[in-house]
Image (cartoon, rainbow, N blue to C red; front, top):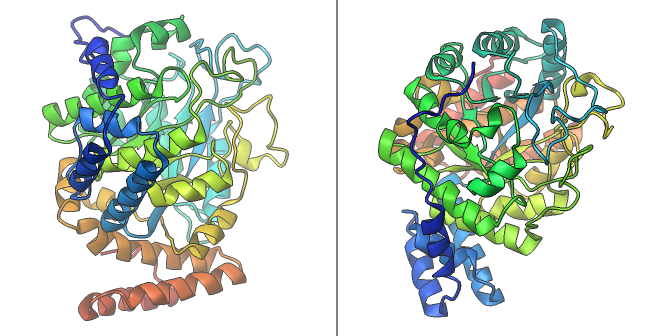
Length: 469
């Protein structure tokens, strides 16, 4: 399928975005506090207000931003943290992205596309670790169409491990398709369709994507429109930080989100903000043209939480352990754990090899090691997929979320999935800490809700699985 962007409108006005950024470089303290008062109401921010907070350098004001983000995060999401893992299906790619190890011109990369048996093997490994939510990742090659991608999804859903393992939600990161292609993915039961514009700056985009289907900026820009037209309610967007000025790309990303909300009644389900990392034979990955430093990155995450309070924020294992821990409080609601970034990686005993990875990762810990740390800090790991399987997605999910639904249903369901993990996969130390956390969380529920959740926890103790509210 060749992309056809004829007649597509470029709704990203670069000049207007720069006007917003340039006009908000200097903001008085009183203005910052006024914006934060509004942000604390969890009703979102304008592009101008977002741009002002992004550019605050004063340490005291930054801490005020962080504190407001912590409060909004706690109010909406509580201490629940969704966990997932990426599963790379193929690294064959026809694009020549200057920053990616999978680019077509990288002759040193070992190319591999998993067979049906290899997919089942990888899924079994992940299930036996305790994963219930996967993000399938595909190189962008025209020979891998929607029918083939849909078949790989079926293989994942059909694979059941020897424990309580089955994958309950499959999200997809693949090349943009036409509406009919997206409809095929919707029919096979994918959760979120994820696709990053990488950078919204047209000139930089053209320079970094000299050939392949990805060269067509507008075809990629309208991928979410086509996915939502095909019935996929939940879409995930993002930018690759370091390719261009992060202020521009952040405001452009939120402009994109606003465009979807205006047209479809709901914006993206998730936003991602990976930073450029080294990759084999990548032209610019070792020296980002627009580096974003930790202080800026932390502020960016906090500001996103305030700007789009009910949108999920995803943090990958590109970041190191310490920074990942800090960002949980500031706004992150979904966390990858135990990630490996090439096809066949989870079955590979010698997985830490730069000649096969898409990029270098900063947090190499196992799923259980990540769980142990977040539990220690009072977070409840969650693999809940109840809303997705009950049809509470897209606009309906957002409407419910704004009424406190996440705390009322998602938090109890997190405890139920965590209980499954503790019984089926965790080591004794993790079990002890996890069960103590569940007991403490139960005491926070009203009497009736506590009784309902306790009953389901007891049923899980006696062998039942996949219970939710």
